[in-house]
Length: 314
Image 1 (cartoon, rainbow, N blue to C red):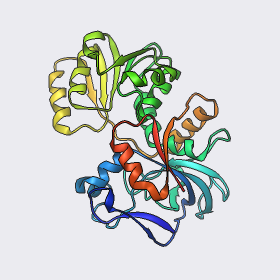
Image 2: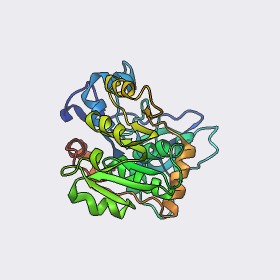
Image 3: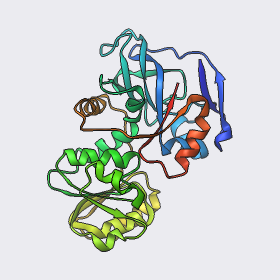
Image 4: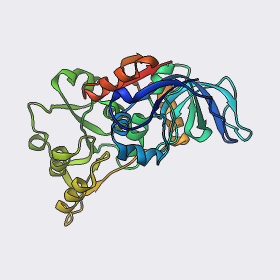
């Protein structure tokens, strides 16, 4: 089968297309013929830094990057009960760990997948994986109806899912993005928009129950300032020194500063499946690349200008 492998951390030139053997499934896995996959900032961060590679793969080299897939089941392990050959499935495979998604065939635990709804394409299903799971796992236990929620970078991968999920939970949603993406952010259900280039959110907002910060740094520091006295800001993977410094500033208050690393979870994938079926969740795919153009897909994502998701097709 075709796969894209990485021998060492570095630039996009290190993504090498080659031929390898198909994976062999264990008793609780299915073999998926991949039709589409999506990529995330973690993909290029792991690709470019030996530290990230070691965290996900240990000393194994070469490695196959990627975690988000959609495709068709072509074989099943002896103990698999949830899927059969011919099922169309999607999921985030083995995160954190070796997902091995940049390949024509991927072995995946049945507990990391869900059936693709009939109203959803392979491309949109692949998009509704790591970013959507992150938004769901962040929000489902932290917000409630009528909470005032601030979502930074609402036009991005996690952000555009988070707006939709928070609105479905009954929250009042405020989101930041550039002015050119205001219409998109509002179309997702946001109640207010802040242009981060011309407005300082910390000067116009107060009484926020929950902030989802995917940026870190000054954004995280200033997010604490807009919270209610018992509010929470959750920052997606932020360097520990910055996180600890911010925690110190609120140590004598009831404000909570936390972080989260998304986990593969079939039950959560089925929640996303139901949201797709009922049109609660509408993934936005702004760029699609063929498998042979994976390096260009990485460049697009690294530009920081992606609206919604980047998808690669096979």
